[in-house]
Amino acid sequence: MKQTVALCVILISLFLSTQLNAQDTVEWSKDRKLNWSDFKAAPNLDIVAYALTSYKIEILPSDIMVDSDENIQDYESLTVVANFYTEHSWVYEKSAYLLLHEQLHFDIAALYAFKIQAEFEKLKAQKNANYNSYVSVYQELWEECLKTQKSYDKETQHGQLVTINDTWIDKITEGINAFE
Image (cartoon, rainbow, N blue to C red):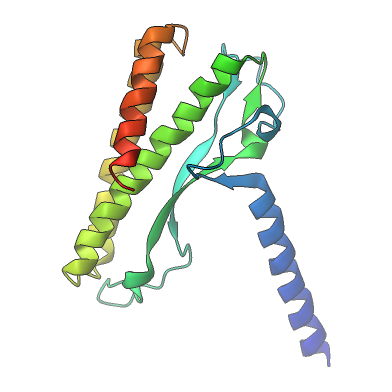
């Protein structure tokens, strides 16, 4: 009886933590744009910025199994998503254009999630289950994503140069559309 109760408590805890985590993230979608209510963290006044977008490119399922030959079990089910983290994202001073700038940071992450997924699909087509192959692809494109994010902020002066920011919006949107 104690084992059954303990199992129920563990399952309920896992369910609740999954629900809480789902509420703390927004998965990128072409149909769902960020809004200021998604930015739930308190502003970090030590950072000279009006807003901060926290995102991550995630590989799902997150609990993959790797065998002794370093092959991923059920590698065919791997997918890649870009998630926005509401509890780590904040805004100090709201404006419509700043929201567009922050959305594009999330869109850049989505573009790289699509790129990683495309490379994963190539590995899957080759029947490549090797863990290191997938990690290598992820790391290479994650580094490229970070460089792109820095270039975006530098070239647009964190969104202050509207014309250049608009050019970036067009460029990233075109890149995303190429995957759909």
